[in-house]
Amino acid sequence: MDRYYSGGLEPDNNESLININGTDFLITNKFKTMLRDSYIDWGTFLEIYHDNIQLRDMFDQVSKLLNVKDNENLHSAMIPIVEKIYDLPLEAHMTVLLKQFMLYEPVSLAIHGLFTTFKHHFEYLVELFSNLRNDYITENKLKVKLNDWSELTRYWEEKNLEYELESSSVILLFLNPPKKIKSKMHYKIPGKEELISCLRDAIKKFTYLGWCPKVPHKRLQALLKFPINEFVSIIRSINPNVDLPDYKKIEQLISDVLSTKPIKPEIKDNYSREKPPKELEQLVKKKSSKTTNSDEYNQAQIKLVKWYVNKILDLRKQLLPYGKQLEMYYVDSAKKISEINTIIKQHLKFENTL
Image (cartoon, rainbow, N blue to C red; front, side):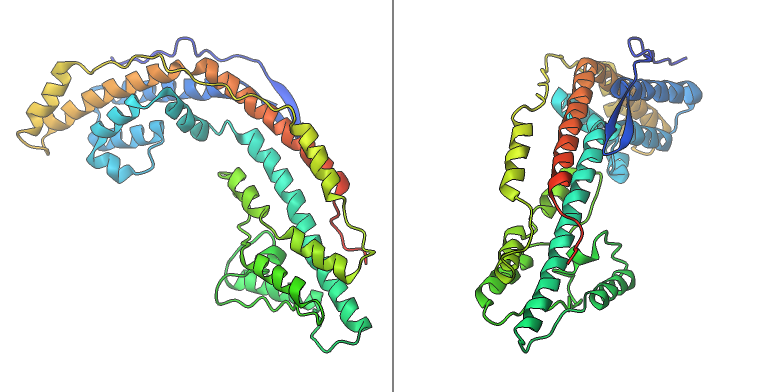
């Protein structure tokens, strides 16, 4: 009977708690646990099916185990794919496993907190601009349309539902809304044409994408393209006495925190790959030369795939030390991001109190 042993991957009870944005996060040796689960799943699959493994069952199992998304491609070229995976550098294997095991989860959670903090402040700036603009137009008796903020946000919410946009911020989304949807927000201020033109141009370059935990860095980077300088310039031009955060001070505080960063471990690839037994390769070639639909050919493929998967698991076992180091790297990075978020929340504004 086929058995696949997971020696060296025994579970441990080392756990710790860290607080990220007010949420307690349990830290364990997740990489080791998830890798051990892979071994167990593979061994269980081999023991259950034994000599009765069908090609479709093998496709499904390998897709799940190796996180191969294109199942149809795997179905038509399983051996070339597992061969390619086996030959990947260790760093590439680690990249795949980081995503598969979600080791970056603490960082994603921390970035989400930072994302939310910036989002609320940017929403505040948009509303502040709209209210100050109304005040300026009224005081100077200018003949341009005012913004009814309540009516405007109600319209945005309706469009958000109508078009099933599911946006987490209608205020930011409808600065530069999807095509065929009008923003209906008014910007024109007589005498401030140059500043308003700069603001409108900057808004056209900004698109609110919302949040996605699978690509936290990219969504935060997209959010930080918000035209904060242009909004601050027009706000201060309308009302020089407005109370705004000291952005330069915030930048300096963030720089101080980032002056010491966690060091990401480097992965050294000194693991030599083996060549599959010639008899297995020859068996597959021999059977494929007759018919690609025969049970003999399918079983020959299965035997060779089993060899590759076993070797891939052996190879990934060499990543255990790096897995633990990377897990702690992401935890330490999350702590830094949370520290930055705390600083920003202390200095930014989120509510329009005018």
